[in-house]
Amino acid sequence: MSDERPTVRPVTLARLVELTHICASGLTTTDEIETTLDVTHRRARETILEAARIDLIEIIEPEAENSKYKTTDVGENSSKRFEMNNGSR
Image (cartoon, rainbow, N blue to C red; front, side, top):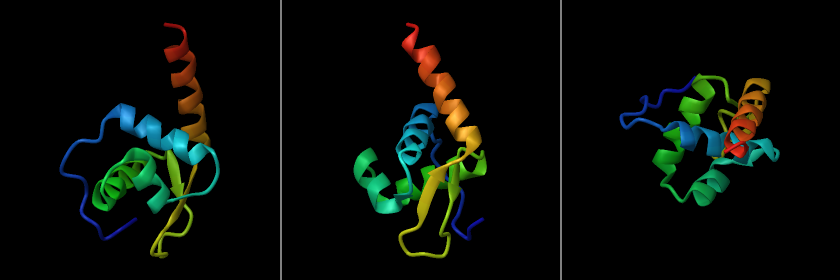
């Protein structure tokens, strides 16, 4: 995985859903995630690592300075289910 320390602050389900949705549009970089979520680089990495840990996204270029990510099948299915449930309200 990574030598970075695991997150200290909890990552919310809503943030994981947002990240999964961002990555569903195609290969996404850390910089794009930072900008879209309006978070620091460190917080973006914490969220990315948590989403990767539970298999919502896949890290495509883990050694690159600005890694790329994409949604996994698990992430796509989870995102679709969330949208279906959220849209029925």
